[in-house]
Image (cartoon, rainbow, N blue to C red; front, top):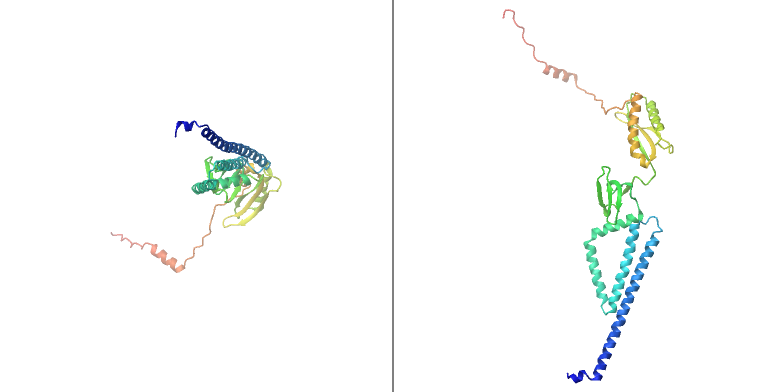
Length: 303
């Protein structure tokens, strides 16, 4: 190509027109992409705040769960916005979405256990079968709840040892909450001898329950005969108390009941059995004869 051709006004005009057309086309795409990004970001932020605010109206929804749902919604909208922006520049979003879906499936399979824990954490935060400070038996793990996250629950067992339990081992199994009810009932079994006065023992136990201020008057405490066992007459001292005072009160009552029974002269027997031995008289005589040594012959005086 000659230099004169490059300096040809017509060629320069055609090149300028082509550049202007290209700049206009791509400029509009860039402006559209920027507008999409701004709109997507504003929409994601607004929807995230709206979810956070509306979920806060429900007392059972924890702040952690509110933040998790709001974040999922925000980043989901941003992901859709990014795909739309790529479509503005001619990127085949169908294949892009397919790649993202395949990658998500692979990650989901690789993190199956973690996702199960997250699902369990969401259900625990949503339905709230226990809260921080409750004493629970969750899936065979007993302790006081210290912390609850989307992945695990932290418990402190009665010995003060921290236990980190994955949420998948808690949700879907039986959960026993010892703290959710304000009051609890407990039974103290007491065995007395068959030779003791049952009425006197019942009166002594009732006096112990009546003298304890931590025992609730309603439902009324009671003492009754539960069973006639092999070695004892089994009584039960039953009462109700506040859940927060259950452990110390039960220990105190057991000690007080023992002292009251001792003062009343009522014994708590050890396990015992009556044994009857039967043997034939002739067999017994033969056994005794076999165990008796033969008599020695008398010694002569002359020897």
